[in-house]
Image 1: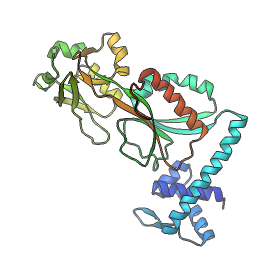
Image 2: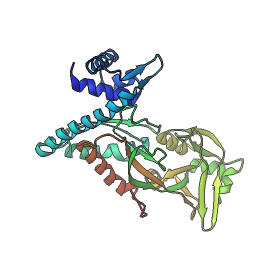
Image 3: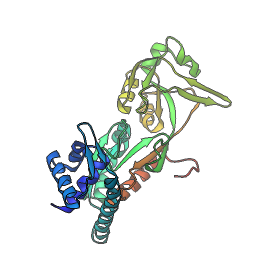
Image 4: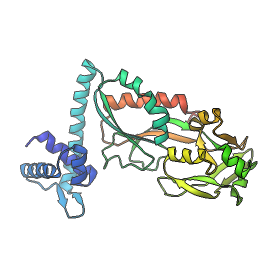
Length: 308
């Protein structure tokens, strides 16, 4: 038995809650994972995991052992990273999940510069607006907008999205130019709905101008859960959009979108890079976080004094 492989397999099963998911993230077979755990338990003469047909639960002894294993694996990673820092640039694989508009409009076009600086870092990018389980999916970090709801995760605030209301000229030619946001609730106006990953519902549009604060729900014929598809629906004239300014700027300049409701403001959205606790922040993750921080400073800078 390779003790390192066995310890790594045990930690992944505990974190993922499944032999199958652990095997997938380690890129080995489920049979191999099961064998490694059996050999580890036989060597220790302690039952680490309780297995049923539906789930895997860590035993009391297993929980104590897991806490020490995580520290040990982190120390090994730190030892490797220290040598790498001394002799070469950061290297290895990073698993990252980011929203689709940020990927297509900002991050991916900037990747050649990142690769030129860190040629030995391999990025596995998940591009989606879905909720990601960082532990179970074995993801190193995610970029997400909104206030954080999971206090067990570690986060670094890297940006702040400012929003505006927009519509395609084809939509305005058909429905007319709304003057006040409340007009979006009229029968002849439509919005494009954005389905929030956390709720699966279309959130109302909270807006204010001077002392007037309102929430507009509007009517929609299509709602989507992906940012790029949301923008495409608006460009096709399906309704009014609420977009981050970085997504709208080029389209407005080309005349493909028209800004609406001059003087009205939307609540800005904080952007965070989130990563699991009990995970060593490797050199490759550290330089990636710093790089994304620099990108966000260009396109969605933080404008207030809140703590990061």
